[in-house]
Every structure is written in C-alpha cells, then in structure tokens.
Length: 132
Image: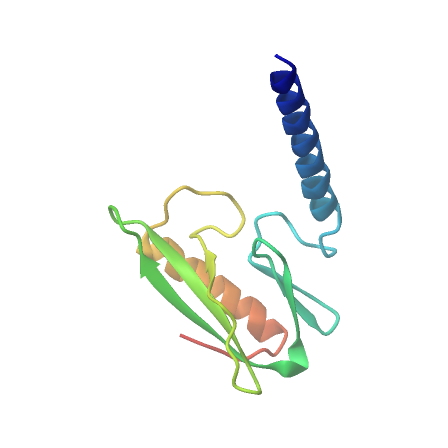
C-alpha cells in the first residue's frame, strides 16, 4: 500500500514538472510567433518551430528546400522543409501541414502546395533563397 502511495506521488510530481516545462517553453516563444506557425524571422535570425525551436543566422543560410511527403494511409500529405547552410550542412527535415495557421489532422496535396507557396513568399520577403 505504501508503495502505491509513493508511486502516485512520484507520478504527480512528474506531471507537474512536465506542465511547468511546457508552460515555460510556450511563454518563451519568439515575439510574433503563434504556436502553429512553421517559422518566424526576428532580426537576423530564422527560428523554425519544431519540437525544440531551432534558430539559424540568416547570413549562414544558403537556401531553404521544400518538398512534400505522402502519408502512409489514404491521401494525406505533409510538407517538408530543410535548411541548407552555406557550409553545405543540411538540417534535419522539418514537417508542416496544409494550413500553417490552424491545426489540421490531414492535408491534401493542394493544401500542402498552397502552404508551401505562402512559406516561400514569406522567405522571399526576408531575401532568403528557397527551392523545391
């Protein structure tokens, strides 16, 4: 019985710690970023909103490459974005969905294409090269 009480106490503490960490990450987002945006540009930095935010100096970026990936089941698609640095190193693939402003469960090929065009326009505004 005492072991069960200690286990429940430990689980409660872990849940509280997890909630505090998630809240802290949410509060420390870069200015102007929404929780479901793909990236944001602030100053001379490009921040990609992946599980852990990744920030790149714009001067170090050669280009951003976009592609799409068909889902395993049905006709859902995901967009893929990779950062290529001037030293030739590539980032891991960052996935995005058909609507960068709202959460969606599945995206069509057309939605991914539209979102990709919107993201490329945003990069062009900041003079960041891109390709497909």
